[in-house]
Image (cartoon, rainbow, N blue to C red; front, side):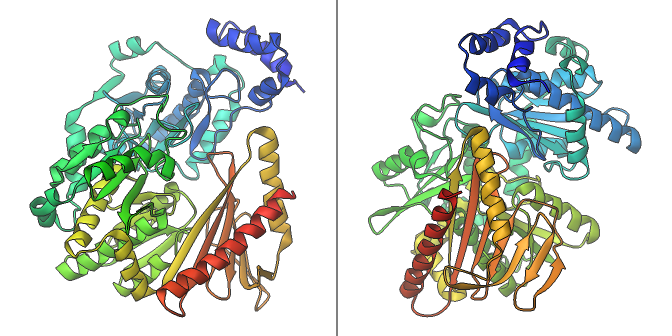
Length: 588
Protein backbone atom coordinates (compact mmCIF):
# COMPACT_ATOMS: atom_id res chain seq x y z
CA UNK A 1 0.00 0.00 0.00
CA UNK A 2 1.30 3.47 -0.93
CA UNK A 3 2.09 5.58 2.13
CA UNK A 4 1.03 9.20 2.59
CA UNK A 5 4.63 10.31 2.14
CA UNK A 6 4.93 8.39 -1.13
CA UNK A 7 1.67 9.92 -2.36
CA UNK A 8 2.98 13.37 -1.43
CA UNK A 9 6.20 12.73 -3.37
CA UNK A 10 4.16 11.62 -6.40
CA UNK A 11 2.18 14.87 -6.25
CA UNK A 12 5.31 17.01 -5.87
CA UNK A 13 6.92 15.37 -8.91
CA UNK A 14 3.89 15.15 -11.22
CA UNK A 15 4.05 17.74 -14.02
CA UNK A 16 0.24 17.57 -14.36
CA UNK A 17 0.00 19.83 -11.32
CA UNK A 18 1.03 23.48 -11.56
CA UNK A 19 4.31 24.66 -10.05
CA UNK A 20 2.70 26.41 -7.08
CA UNK A 21 0.78 23.29 -6.06
CA UNK A 22 3.84 21.06 -6.40
CA UNK A 23 6.01 23.43 -4.36
CA UNK A 24 3.38 23.57 -1.62
CA UNK A 25 3.73 19.81 -1.12
CA UNK A 26 7.50 19.81 -1.56
CA UNK A 27 7.85 22.32 1.29
CA UNK A 28 5.95 19.93 3.60
CA UNK A 29 8.27 17.08 2.55
CA UNK A 30 11.38 19.22 3.09
CA UNK A 31 10.13 20.29 6.52
CA UNK A 32 9.39 16.65 7.41
CA UNK A 33 5.89 17.76 8.46
CA UNK A 34 4.50 14.24 8.63
CA UNK A 35 1.33 15.24 10.52
CA UNK A 36 0.27 17.64 7.75
CA UNK A 37 1.36 15.22 5.00
CA UNK A 38 -0.74 12.50 6.64
CA UNK A 39 -3.78 14.79 6.85
CA UNK A 40 -3.49 15.70 3.17
CA UNK A 41 -2.82 12.22 1.78
CA UNK A 42 -4.09 9.51 4.15
CA UNK A 43 -7.25 9.36 2.04
CA UNK A 44 -8.83 10.98 -1.00
CA UNK A 45 -11.12 13.88 -0.21
CA UNK A 46 -14.50 12.27 0.31
CA UNK A 47 -17.18 12.87 -2.27
CA UNK A 48 -20.21 12.63 -0.01
CA UNK A 49 -23.86 12.48 -0.98
CA UNK A 50 -23.90 16.28 -1.28
CA UNK A 51 -20.47 16.81 -2.84
CA UNK A 52 -17.12 18.00 -1.49
CA UNK A 53 -16.16 20.19 1.47
CA UNK A 54 -12.67 20.58 2.87
CA UNK A 55 -9.80 22.88 3.76
CA UNK A 56 -8.21 24.55 0.74
CA UNK A 57 -4.78 23.34 -0.29
CA UNK A 58 -2.78 21.00 -2.47
CA UNK A 59 -3.19 17.26 -1.91
CA UNK A 60 -5.66 14.43 -2.43
CA UNK A 61 -7.57 15.20 0.81
CA UNK A 62 -7.92 18.93 0.18
CA UNK A 63 -10.13 20.96 -2.09
CA UNK A 64 -8.25 22.44 -5.01
CA UNK A 65 -8.81 22.86 -8.73
CA UNK A 66 -7.71 19.29 -9.37
CA UNK A 67 -10.14 17.66 -6.94
CA UNK A 68 -12.84 19.99 -8.29
CA UNK A 69 -12.07 18.81 -11.83
CA UNK A 70 -12.19 15.18 -10.74
CA UNK A 71 -15.58 15.66 -9.06
CA UNK A 72 -16.88 17.46 -12.16
CA UNK A 73 -15.73 14.65 -14.45
CA UNK A 74 -17.70 12.21 -12.28
CA UNK A 75 -20.78 14.45 -12.46
CA UNK A 76 -20.35 14.87 -16.23
CA UNK A 77 -20.33 11.09 -16.66
CA UNK A 78 -23.61 10.76 -14.78
CA UNK A 79 -25.20 13.66 -16.72
CA UNK A 80 -24.20 12.15 -20.06
CA UNK A 81 -25.39 8.67 -19.10
CA UNK A 82 -28.73 9.99 -17.82
CA UNK A 83 -29.16 12.21 -20.89
CA UNK A 84 -28.50 9.28 -23.21
CA UNK A 85 -31.08 7.14 -21.44
CA UNK A 86 -33.74 9.88 -21.44
CA UNK A 87 -33.20 11.19 -24.96
CA UNK A 88 -31.67 14.56 -24.04
CA UNK A 89 -29.40 15.68 -26.89
CA UNK A 90 -28.01 18.96 -25.52
CA UNK A 91 -27.34 18.46 -21.79
CA UNK A 92 -26.55 21.47 -19.61
CA UNK A 93 -25.79 22.36 -16.01
CA UNK A 94 -26.25 25.50 -13.89
CA UNK A 95 -23.31 26.93 -11.92
CA UNK A 96 -23.06 29.50 -9.14
CA UNK A 97 -20.47 30.44 -6.54
CA UNK A 98 -20.08 32.34 -3.28
CA UNK A 99 -17.49 34.79 -1.92
CA UNK A 100 -14.94 32.25 -0.73
CA UNK A 101 -11.36 32.08 -1.88
CA UNK A 102 -11.17 30.54 -5.38
CA UNK A 103 -14.97 30.12 -5.65
CA UNK A 104 -15.21 31.88 -9.01
CA UNK A 105 -12.07 30.11 -10.25
CA UNK A 106 -13.48 26.73 -9.20
CA UNK A 107 -16.79 27.57 -10.89
CA UNK A 108 -14.90 28.22 -14.13
CA UNK A 109 -13.06 24.90 -13.69
CA UNK A 110 -16.47 23.20 -13.50
CA UNK A 111 -17.53 24.85 -16.77
CA UNK A 112 -14.25 23.88 -18.46
CA UNK A 113 -14.56 20.19 -17.58
CA UNK A 114 -18.22 20.17 -18.59
CA UNK A 115 -17.39 21.81 -21.93
CA UNK A 116 -14.69 19.19 -22.58
CA UNK A 117 -17.44 16.60 -22.10
CA UNK A 118 -19.80 18.40 -24.49
CA UNK A 119 -22.04 19.87 -21.77
CA UNK A 120 -23.15 23.52 -21.69
CA UNK A 121 -22.99 25.61 -18.51
CA UNK A 122 -25.28 28.40 -17.34
CA UNK A 123 -23.09 30.43 -14.97
CA UNK A 124 -24.15 33.59 -13.14
CA UNK A 125 -22.32 36.79 -14.12
CA UNK A 126 -21.92 37.63 -10.43
CA UNK A 127 -21.82 35.56 -7.28
CA UNK A 128 -25.27 34.39 -6.20
CA UNK A 129 -26.64 32.23 -3.39
CA UNK A 130 -27.76 28.61 -3.16
CA UNK A 131 -31.48 29.28 -3.78
CA UNK A 132 -30.68 31.14 -7.01
CA UNK A 133 -28.53 28.21 -8.19
CA UNK A 134 -31.44 25.85 -7.57
CA UNK A 135 -33.71 28.31 -9.37
CA UNK A 136 -31.35 28.45 -12.36
CA UNK A 137 -31.36 24.65 -12.68
CA UNK A 138 -35.15 24.68 -12.92
CA UNK A 139 -35.41 27.89 -15.00
CA UNK A 140 -32.95 26.67 -17.65
CA UNK A 141 -34.19 23.06 -17.48
CA UNK A 142 -30.68 21.83 -16.74
CA UNK A 143 -29.72 18.23 -16.02
CA UNK A 144 -27.66 19.20 -12.96
CA UNK A 145 -26.16 22.09 -11.00
CA UNK A 146 -23.05 22.95 -9.01
CA UNK A 147 -22.78 25.50 -6.21
CA UNK A 148 -19.21 26.31 -5.21
CA UNK A 149 -19.46 27.02 -1.49
CA UNK A 150 -18.52 25.78 1.96
CA UNK A 151 -21.61 27.41 3.46
CA UNK A 152 -20.79 28.75 6.94
CA UNK A 153 -17.48 26.89 7.47
CA UNK A 154 -14.38 28.88 8.51
CA UNK A 155 -12.46 30.89 5.84
CA UNK A 156 -9.89 28.17 5.12
CA UNK A 157 -12.65 25.93 3.66
CA UNK A 158 -14.36 25.69 0.31
CA UNK A 159 -16.73 23.15 -1.16
CA UNK A 160 -18.80 21.88 -4.04
CA UNK A 161 -22.50 21.04 -3.79
CA UNK A 162 -24.15 18.95 -6.48
CA UNK A 163 -27.76 19.39 -7.63
CA UNK A 164 -29.87 17.28 -9.95
CA UNK A 165 -32.42 18.23 -12.64
CA UNK A 166 -35.20 18.99 -10.14
CA UNK A 167 -33.08 21.70 -8.50
CA UNK A 168 -32.57 19.67 -5.32
CA UNK A 169 -29.29 18.34 -4.00
CA UNK A 170 -28.62 15.02 -5.64
CA UNK A 171 -30.24 11.95 -4.04
CA UNK A 172 -30.20 8.17 -4.72
CA UNK A 173 -29.50 6.60 -7.09
CA UNK A 174 -27.69 9.47 -8.83
CA UNK A 175 -25.62 10.49 -5.81
CA UNK A 176 -24.26 6.97 -5.38
CA UNK A 177 -23.56 6.72 -9.11
CA UNK A 178 -21.58 9.99 -9.04
CA UNK A 179 -19.65 8.87 -5.96
CA UNK A 180 -18.74 5.57 -7.65
CA UNK A 181 -17.65 7.40 -10.80
CA UNK A 182 -15.53 9.75 -8.67
CA UNK A 183 -13.65 6.93 -6.97
CA UNK A 184 -13.23 5.11 -10.30
CA UNK A 185 -11.11 8.05 -11.50
CA UNK A 186 -7.70 6.96 -10.23
CA UNK A 187 -5.61 9.34 -12.34
CA UNK A 188 -6.14 13.07 -12.88
CA UNK A 189 -5.07 12.46 -16.48
CA UNK A 190 -8.46 10.81 -17.03
CA UNK A 191 -10.23 14.13 -16.42
CA UNK A 192 -11.28 15.93 -19.60
CA UNK A 193 -10.51 19.65 -19.68
CA UNK A 194 -10.38 22.63 -22.03
CA UNK A 195 -9.52 26.24 -21.26
CA UNK A 196 -12.48 28.35 -20.07
CA UNK A 197 -11.99 31.04 -22.74
CA UNK A 198 -11.91 28.35 -25.39
CA UNK A 199 -15.10 26.83 -23.98
CA UNK A 200 -16.75 30.25 -24.20
CA UNK A 201 -15.64 30.70 -27.81
CA UNK A 202 -17.10 27.29 -28.67
CA UNK A 203 -20.49 28.28 -27.23
CA UNK A 204 -20.44 26.11 -24.11
CA UNK A 205 -20.66 29.05 -21.66
CA UNK A 206 -23.95 30.88 -21.08
CA UNK A 207 -23.73 33.89 -18.73
CA UNK A 208 -26.83 34.32 -16.56
CA UNK A 209 -27.91 37.89 -15.84
CA UNK A 210 -30.46 40.14 -14.18
CA UNK A 211 -33.49 38.82 -16.10
CA UNK A 212 -33.23 35.47 -14.33
CA UNK A 213 -32.51 37.16 -10.99
CA UNK A 214 -35.66 39.28 -11.34
CA UNK A 215 -37.72 36.24 -12.27
CA UNK A 216 -36.53 34.66 -9.00
CA UNK A 217 -37.63 37.72 -7.00
CA UNK A 218 -41.01 37.78 -8.73
CA UNK A 219 -41.64 34.13 -7.96
CA UNK A 220 -40.61 34.08 -4.29
CA UNK A 221 -42.51 37.29 -3.52
CA UNK A 222 -45.65 35.87 -5.15
CA UNK A 223 -45.91 33.62 -2.06
CA UNK A 224 -46.15 36.55 0.36
CA UNK A 225 -49.01 35.78 2.75
CA UNK A 226 -50.10 39.40 3.39
CA UNK A 227 -48.59 41.48 0.54
CA UNK A 228 -50.86 44.46 1.17
CA UNK A 229 -49.69 44.70 4.78
CA UNK A 230 -46.05 44.66 3.64
CA UNK A 231 -46.59 47.32 0.96
CA UNK A 232 -48.56 49.61 3.28
CA UNK A 233 -46.69 49.19 6.56
CA UNK A 234 -43.31 47.73 5.56
CA UNK A 235 -41.54 51.01 6.23
CA UNK A 236 -42.73 50.82 9.88
CA UNK A 237 -40.34 47.93 10.52
CA UNK A 238 -36.74 49.06 10.92
CA UNK A 239 -34.39 46.24 9.88
CA UNK A 240 -30.64 45.76 10.22
CA UNK A 241 -29.12 43.23 7.85
CA UNK A 242 -25.67 41.71 7.45
CA UNK A 243 -24.61 39.36 4.64
CA UNK A 244 -21.43 38.58 6.68
CA UNK A 245 -19.22 39.17 3.61
CA UNK A 246 -21.20 36.63 1.56
CA UNK A 247 -23.57 36.52 -1.41
CA UNK A 248 -26.62 38.05 0.26
CA UNK A 249 -26.26 41.82 -0.13
CA UNK A 250 -27.88 42.34 -3.54
CA UNK A 251 -30.48 39.53 -3.42
CA UNK A 252 -31.70 40.21 0.12
CA UNK A 253 -31.88 44.00 -0.06
CA UNK A 254 -33.49 43.82 -3.52
CA UNK A 255 -36.17 41.35 -2.42
CA UNK A 256 -36.88 43.31 0.78
CA UNK A 257 -37.27 46.57 -1.13
CA UNK A 258 -39.53 45.04 -3.78
CA UNK A 259 -41.79 43.66 -1.05
CA UNK A 260 -42.04 47.03 0.71
CA UNK A 261 -39.35 46.82 3.40
CA UNK A 262 -37.22 49.85 2.56
CA UNK A 263 -36.27 50.89 6.10
CA UNK A 264 -33.13 48.72 6.05
CA UNK A 265 -29.66 49.43 7.42
CA UNK A 266 -26.83 47.22 6.17
CA UNK A 267 -23.72 46.61 8.29
CA UNK A 268 -21.21 48.46 6.13
CA UNK A 269 -18.16 46.61 7.47
CA UNK A 270 -19.70 43.26 6.43
CA UNK A 271 -21.54 44.32 3.28
CA UNK A 272 -19.07 43.43 0.56
CA UNK A 273 -17.97 39.90 -0.37
CA UNK A 274 -14.67 39.02 1.29
CA UNK A 275 -13.15 35.54 1.33
CA UNK A 276 -11.22 36.29 4.56
CA UNK A 277 -14.42 37.06 6.51
CA UNK A 278 -12.26 39.54 8.47
CA UNK A 279 -14.83 40.66 11.04
CA UNK A 280 -15.87 37.21 12.32
CA UNK A 281 -14.20 34.03 13.54
CA UNK A 282 -16.80 32.00 11.61
CA UNK A 283 -19.40 33.42 9.18
CA UNK A 284 -22.31 31.54 10.73
CA UNK A 285 -25.40 33.61 11.65
CA UNK A 286 -26.44 30.84 14.04
CA UNK A 287 -23.71 32.16 16.35
CA UNK A 288 -24.13 35.33 18.41
CA UNK A 289 -20.53 36.33 17.68
CA UNK A 290 -21.22 36.48 13.93
CA UNK A 291 -24.28 38.68 14.56
CA UNK A 292 -22.49 41.11 16.92
CA UNK A 293 -21.97 43.96 14.44
CA UNK A 294 -25.59 43.70 13.30
CA UNK A 295 -26.77 43.75 16.91
CA UNK A 296 -24.57 46.77 17.70
CA UNK A 297 -26.05 48.63 14.73
CA UNK A 298 -29.56 47.57 15.76
CA UNK A 299 -29.02 49.09 19.22
CA UNK A 300 -27.39 52.22 17.77
CA UNK A 301 -30.22 52.89 15.29
CA UNK A 302 -33.13 51.67 17.40
CA UNK A 303 -34.04 49.03 14.83
CA UNK A 304 -36.70 46.41 15.55
CA UNK A 305 -34.71 43.41 14.39
CA UNK A 306 -31.36 42.23 13.03
CA UNK A 307 -30.99 39.58 10.34
CA UNK A 308 -27.86 37.79 9.16
CA UNK A 309 -27.20 35.32 6.36
CA UNK A 310 -24.29 32.95 5.82
CA UNK A 311 -21.91 33.15 2.82
CA UNK A 312 -24.14 31.17 0.44
CA UNK A 313 -27.33 32.79 1.84
CA UNK A 314 -29.30 29.68 2.62
CA UNK A 315 -29.45 30.24 6.40
CA UNK A 316 -31.03 33.00 8.45
CA UNK A 317 -29.97 34.33 11.88
CA UNK A 318 -32.31 36.56 13.93
CA UNK A 319 -31.65 38.86 16.89
CA UNK A 320 -33.74 41.50 18.70
CA UNK A 321 -34.15 43.13 22.08
CA UNK A 322 -36.59 41.97 24.76
CA UNK A 323 -36.79 43.48 28.23
CA UNK A 324 -33.35 45.06 27.85
CA UNK A 325 -31.60 41.88 26.70
CA UNK A 326 -30.58 40.75 23.22
CA UNK A 327 -32.39 37.59 22.16
CA UNK A 328 -30.96 35.13 19.62
CA UNK A 329 -33.83 32.78 18.88
CA UNK A 330 -32.84 29.36 17.63
CA UNK A 331 -33.65 27.65 14.36
CA UNK A 332 -36.59 25.72 15.80
CA UNK A 333 -38.14 28.89 17.20
CA UNK A 334 -37.79 30.75 13.89
CA UNK A 335 -39.49 27.81 12.17
CA UNK A 336 -42.29 27.76 14.75
CA UNK A 337 -42.97 31.48 14.20
CA UNK A 338 -42.91 31.14 10.41
CA UNK A 339 -45.18 28.10 10.33
CA UNK A 340 -47.68 29.49 12.82
CA UNK A 341 -47.88 32.84 11.04
CA UNK A 342 -48.29 31.22 7.62
CA UNK A 343 -50.97 28.71 8.58
CA UNK A 344 -52.91 31.05 10.89
CA UNK A 345 -53.09 33.77 8.24
CA UNK A 346 -53.80 31.49 5.29
CA UNK A 347 -56.72 30.08 7.27
CA UNK A 348 -57.89 33.51 8.42
CA UNK A 349 -57.59 35.01 4.91
CA UNK A 350 -59.40 32.07 3.31
CA UNK A 351 -56.35 31.39 1.10
CA UNK A 352 -55.32 27.99 2.46
CA UNK A 353 -54.88 25.72 -0.58
CA UNK A 354 -56.51 22.30 -0.80
CA UNK A 355 -54.54 19.30 0.42
CA UNK A 356 -51.71 21.33 2.06
CA UNK A 357 -48.60 19.84 3.62
CA UNK A 358 -45.26 20.82 5.14
CA UNK A 359 -41.98 18.95 5.63
CA UNK A 360 -39.54 18.98 8.56
CA UNK A 361 -36.60 16.86 9.63
CA UNK A 362 -36.70 14.26 12.40
CA UNK A 363 -34.45 16.48 14.55
CA UNK A 364 -36.75 19.51 14.24
CA UNK A 365 -39.23 20.31 17.03
CA UNK A 366 -42.40 18.17 17.17
CA UNK A 367 -44.32 21.30 18.23
CA UNK A 368 -44.59 22.18 14.54
CA UNK A 369 -46.62 19.02 13.98
CA UNK A 370 -49.15 20.19 16.59
CA UNK A 371 -49.48 23.57 14.88
CA UNK A 372 -49.96 21.96 11.47
CA UNK A 373 -52.55 19.55 12.86
CA UNK A 374 -54.68 22.40 14.20
CA UNK A 375 -54.86 24.02 10.77
CA UNK A 376 -55.50 20.80 8.86
CA UNK A 377 -52.04 20.70 7.28
CA UNK A 378 -50.36 17.32 6.84
CA UNK A 379 -46.89 16.88 8.40
CA UNK A 380 -44.04 14.87 6.94
CA UNK A 381 -40.65 14.18 8.55
CA UNK A 382 -37.43 13.09 6.89
CA UNK A 383 -33.68 12.87 7.46
CA UNK A 384 -31.56 15.88 8.34
CA UNK A 385 -30.83 18.18 5.43
CA UNK A 386 -32.79 19.95 2.74
CA UNK A 387 -31.74 17.39 0.14
CA UNK A 388 -34.08 14.99 1.93
CA UNK A 389 -36.80 17.61 2.53
CA UNK A 390 -36.86 18.52 -1.16
CA UNK A 391 -36.45 14.92 -2.25
CA UNK A 392 -39.59 14.12 -0.26
CA UNK A 393 -41.34 17.13 -1.85
CA UNK A 394 -40.59 15.71 -5.28
CA UNK A 395 -41.81 12.27 -4.26
CA UNK A 396 -45.08 13.68 -2.89
CA UNK A 397 -45.59 15.74 -6.05
CA UNK A 398 -45.28 12.63 -8.21
CA UNK A 399 -47.49 10.44 -6.02
CA UNK A 400 -50.17 13.06 -5.37
CA UNK A 401 -50.25 15.96 -7.87
CA UNK A 402 -53.09 17.56 -5.87
CA UNK A 403 -50.85 18.04 -2.81
CA UNK A 404 -49.78 21.63 -2.13
CA UNK A 405 -46.43 22.30 -0.48
CA UNK A 406 -46.44 25.20 1.99
CA UNK A 407 -43.25 25.12 4.03
CA UNK A 408 -40.02 23.22 4.64
CA UNK A 409 -37.90 23.63 7.75
CA UNK A 410 -34.92 22.23 9.62
CA UNK A 411 -33.56 23.20 13.02
CA UNK A 412 -30.24 24.43 11.59
CA UNK A 413 -31.69 27.79 10.51
CA UNK A 414 -32.88 26.70 7.07
CA UNK A 415 -36.36 27.43 5.66
CA UNK A 416 -38.28 27.20 2.39
CA UNK A 417 -41.57 29.18 2.34
CA UNK A 418 -42.31 28.60 -1.38
CA UNK A 419 -41.95 25.88 -4.01
CA UNK A 420 -39.88 27.57 -6.73
CA UNK A 421 -36.54 26.13 -5.62
CA UNK A 422 -35.48 22.87 -4.04
CA UNK A 423 -33.17 23.93 -1.22
CA UNK A 424 -33.33 26.18 1.81
CA UNK A 425 -33.68 29.81 0.81
CA UNK A 426 -32.12 32.59 2.90
CA UNK A 427 -33.41 35.31 0.58
CA UNK A 428 -37.04 34.25 0.89
CA UNK A 429 -36.48 33.54 4.60
CA UNK A 430 -35.46 37.16 5.25
CA UNK A 431 -38.44 38.60 3.40
CA UNK A 432 -40.81 36.15 5.07
CA UNK A 433 -39.40 36.73 8.55
CA UNK A 434 -39.74 40.48 8.00
CA UNK A 435 -43.41 39.87 7.21
CA UNK A 436 -43.79 37.74 10.36
CA UNK A 437 -42.07 40.37 12.53
CA UNK A 438 -44.20 43.20 11.11
CA UNK A 439 -47.39 41.21 11.71
CA UNK A 440 -46.63 40.69 15.39
CA UNK A 441 -45.32 44.25 15.81
CA UNK A 442 -48.70 45.54 14.64
CA UNK A 443 -50.18 43.48 17.51
CA UNK A 444 -47.74 45.06 19.98
CA UNK A 445 -45.67 41.88 20.29
CA UNK A 446 -41.99 41.16 19.76
CA UNK A 447 -40.96 37.65 18.71
CA UNK A 448 -40.37 36.34 22.27
CA UNK A 449 -43.87 37.48 23.22
CA UNK A 450 -45.24 35.92 20.05
CA UNK A 451 -43.50 32.62 20.88
CA UNK A 452 -44.92 32.66 24.40
CA UNK A 453 -48.38 33.14 22.93
CA UNK A 454 -47.84 30.07 20.74
CA UNK A 455 -46.47 28.08 23.72
CA UNK A 456 -49.53 28.97 25.77
CA UNK A 457 -51.72 27.50 23.04
CA UNK A 458 -49.73 24.43 22.02
CA UNK A 459 -47.52 23.60 25.04
CA UNK A 460 -43.91 24.50 25.76
CA UNK A 461 -40.99 22.96 23.91
CA UNK A 462 -37.28 23.59 24.30
CA UNK A 463 -34.71 22.41 21.80
CA UNK A 464 -30.96 22.38 22.41
CA UNK A 465 -28.16 21.44 20.02
CA UNK A 466 -24.81 20.27 21.37
CA UNK A 467 -21.92 20.24 18.89
CA UNK A 468 -18.78 18.33 19.89
CA UNK A 469 -15.93 19.20 17.50
CA UNK A 470 -13.10 16.74 16.83
CA UNK A 471 -10.63 17.73 14.09
CA UNK A 472 -8.61 15.63 11.66
CA UNK A 473 -8.07 11.89 11.44
CA UNK A 474 -8.01 11.41 15.24
CA UNK A 475 -11.21 13.40 15.55
CA UNK A 476 -12.92 11.30 12.91
CA UNK A 477 -11.98 8.15 14.81
CA UNK A 478 -13.30 9.64 18.06
CA UNK A 479 -16.65 10.47 16.46
CA UNK A 480 -16.86 6.86 15.22
CA UNK A 481 -16.20 5.61 18.78
CA UNK A 482 -18.93 7.83 20.23
CA UNK A 483 -21.51 6.63 17.72
CA UNK A 484 -20.52 2.99 18.30
CA UNK A 485 -20.77 3.45 22.08
CA UNK A 486 -24.31 4.81 21.92
CA UNK A 487 -25.31 2.21 19.33
CA UNK A 488 -24.07 -0.61 21.61
CA UNK A 489 -25.39 0.99 24.81
CA UNK A 490 -29.08 0.35 24.07
CA UNK A 491 -30.29 1.79 27.41
CA UNK A 492 -33.80 1.46 28.82
CA UNK A 493 -33.58 4.85 30.53
CA UNK A 494 -31.38 7.92 30.35
CA UNK A 495 -30.99 10.56 33.08
CA UNK A 496 -33.97 9.09 34.89
CA UNK A 497 -36.24 9.18 31.84
CA UNK A 498 -37.70 5.94 30.57
CA UNK A 499 -37.11 5.23 26.90
CA UNK A 500 -40.08 4.11 24.84
CA UNK A 501 -38.30 3.41 21.55
CA UNK A 502 -34.82 3.48 20.01
CA UNK A 503 -34.44 4.29 16.31
CA UNK A 504 -31.30 3.30 14.43
CA UNK A 505 -31.36 4.81 10.96
CA UNK A 506 -28.20 2.93 9.98
CA UNK A 507 -29.75 -0.51 10.50
CA UNK A 508 -33.21 0.80 9.56
CA UNK A 509 -34.70 -0.67 12.74
CA UNK A 510 -36.83 0.90 15.47
CA UNK A 511 -37.15 -1.11 18.68
CA UNK A 512 -40.15 -0.55 20.95
CA UNK A 513 -38.93 -1.22 24.50
CA UNK A 514 -42.46 -1.55 25.89
CA UNK A 515 -43.52 -4.34 23.52
CA UNK A 516 -39.97 -5.53 22.77
CA UNK A 517 -40.93 -5.56 19.09
CA UNK A 518 -38.82 -4.35 16.17
CA UNK A 519 -40.07 -2.71 13.00
CA UNK A 520 -38.61 -1.12 9.88
CA UNK A 521 -37.90 2.59 9.56
CA UNK A 522 -39.16 4.04 6.28
CA UNK A 523 -36.14 6.29 5.75
CA UNK A 524 -32.92 6.16 3.71
CA UNK A 525 -29.95 4.64 5.53
CA UNK A 526 -28.11 7.23 7.65
CA UNK A 527 -25.79 7.20 10.67
CA UNK A 528 -28.39 8.54 13.11
CA UNK A 529 -29.65 7.23 16.46
CA UNK A 530 -32.85 8.49 18.06
CA UNK A 531 -34.34 7.99 21.53
CA UNK A 532 -38.05 8.55 22.12
CA UNK A 533 -38.90 8.90 25.81
CA UNK A 534 -42.22 7.96 27.36
CA UNK A 535 -42.78 11.55 28.48
CA UNK A 536 -42.57 12.84 24.89
CA UNK A 537 -38.97 14.06 25.01
CA UNK A 538 -36.52 13.08 22.28
CA UNK A 539 -32.75 12.81 21.82
CA UNK A 540 -30.98 12.31 18.50
CA UNK A 541 -27.30 12.05 17.67
CA UNK A 542 -25.44 11.98 14.36
CA UNK A 543 -22.07 12.93 12.88
CA UNK A 544 -22.16 16.06 10.74
CA UNK A 545 -21.91 15.33 7.04
CA UNK A 546 -20.01 18.54 6.31
CA UNK A 547 -18.00 19.45 9.43
CA UNK A 548 -15.70 17.62 11.89
CA UNK A 549 -18.31 17.36 14.62
CA UNK A 550 -20.91 15.11 16.18
CA UNK A 551 -24.31 16.64 16.92
CA UNK A 552 -26.73 15.89 19.77
CA UNK A 553 -30.30 17.18 19.46
CA UNK A 554 -32.21 17.46 22.75
CA UNK A 555 -35.98 18.08 22.47
CA UNK A 556 -37.92 18.60 25.69
CA UNK A 557 -41.69 19.04 26.03
CA UNK A 558 -43.39 20.29 29.19
CA UNK A 559 -47.18 20.38 29.55
CA UNK A 560 -47.81 20.88 33.28
CA UNK A 561 -47.67 24.11 35.29
CA UNK A 562 -47.33 27.76 34.34
CA UNK A 563 -45.19 28.78 31.39
CA UNK A 564 -42.40 29.85 33.76
CA UNK A 565 -42.55 26.48 35.55
CA UNK A 566 -42.47 24.61 32.25
CA UNK A 567 -39.40 26.56 31.14
CA UNK A 568 -37.62 25.85 34.44
CA UNK A 569 -38.40 22.11 34.25
CA UNK A 570 -37.22 21.93 30.64
CA UNK A 571 -33.93 23.63 31.49
CA UNK A 572 -33.28 21.22 34.37
CA UNK A 573 -33.82 18.14 32.18
CA UNK A 574 -31.74 19.62 29.35
CA UNK A 575 -28.83 20.38 31.70
CA UNK A 576 -28.87 16.80 33.03
CA UNK A 577 -28.75 15.32 29.52
CA UNK A 578 -25.98 17.71 28.46
CA UNK A 579 -23.86 16.73 31.47
CA UNK A 580 -24.38 13.03 30.71
CA UNK A 581 -23.38 13.42 27.04
CA UNK A 582 -20.28 15.49 27.79
CA UNK A 583 -19.08 13.07 30.46
CA UNK A 584 -19.68 10.06 28.22
CA UNK A 585 -17.93 11.58 25.18
CA UNK A 586 -14.94 12.70 27.24
CA UNK A 587 -14.26 9.14 28.36
CA UNK A 588 -14.24 7.62 24.87
